[in-house]
Image (cartoon, rainbow, N blue to C red; front, side, top):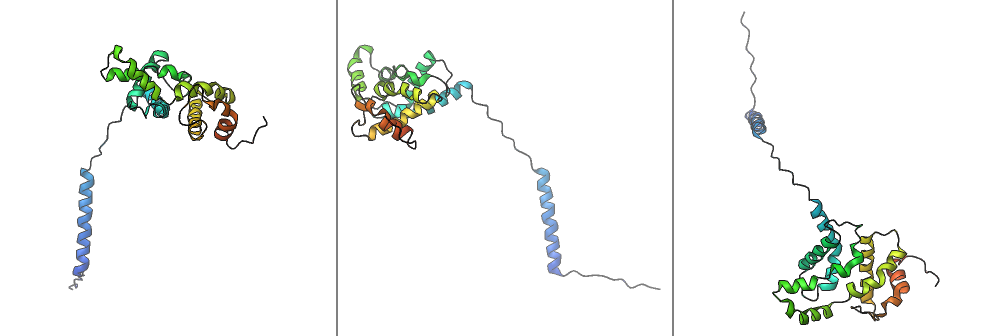
Length: 213
């Protein structure tokens, strides 16, 4: 006895979809078999010396802007001169506990002379320009910092040297906006009288209750 053969037909649209899926699957498999993982070489860690210089740069950028931005000495050159002096006095390591902020005068000692040397001036010809440049400085390093550095250390004994410098920089902004003191500080500037009322109470401890005096 002969059996009837059963056949099923797939609609053309459905067959096209099936063929498309098979084609996409084959293509994906081919891509996955040829894909290679690209690995980038790991960048070397910064050296201790570079980390110290980076910290030094960040710490003293506000100082160089305050003292030298108005007299035409390039900021990078200021930092280089200060860093060279730092290496002589404290070595090539600098972090937040480095005592260098207490010695700003000596750190900036050669900034002007280095600038003039780079400009091609001879030592014997530096007297006039050096004097003029020093007269153009605002007095933050030479006068303001010496007046208040030790006061801050005594008032905030747990502050590290970098934090003491940050407080001095914050106080300088208050100095400039106080009409009686102005944008420069000299030996005779009366800003020392404002330590408690203006700088300590209004700037360093603005939210503290008023203390009896």
